[in-house]
Length: 145
Image (cartoon, rainbow, N blue to C red; front, side, top):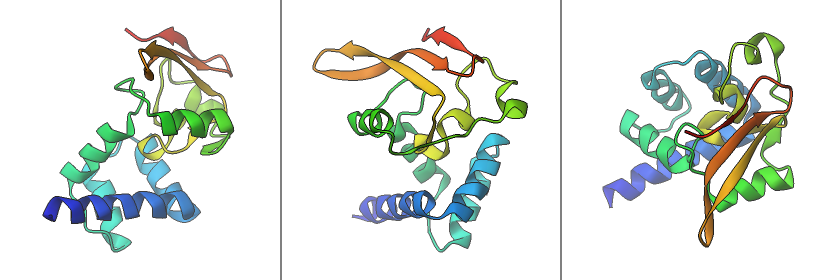
């Protein structure tokens, strides 16, 4: 039961981040800087959400960020349908990376850049692993190792 409350707090914080531009801007700043998870947890506390580093890590893993190569069907629908995307392109930032980075996918993979594309491998009845990552601005195009 206690874990359910924690997950509710994390989910509520994620939903708040998706709807609050100011909060998302702060998270983007922290994420792009590769900030320690503790700072994200502290920011959540400032907004009244009681989460831990472990809660954040669990949400990170569940989000299926490209770091792990796992994408949910919901993520795929969001990206394919244009929902959950924005132009996150910044040549000063993007030019530094040769692989998927925070700026490509946003907070917990929740807001993909319009220029990022992941081709998915058919893993049976579910497409679950990114095979190829492409920046349509030309910064990277590689197969998952």
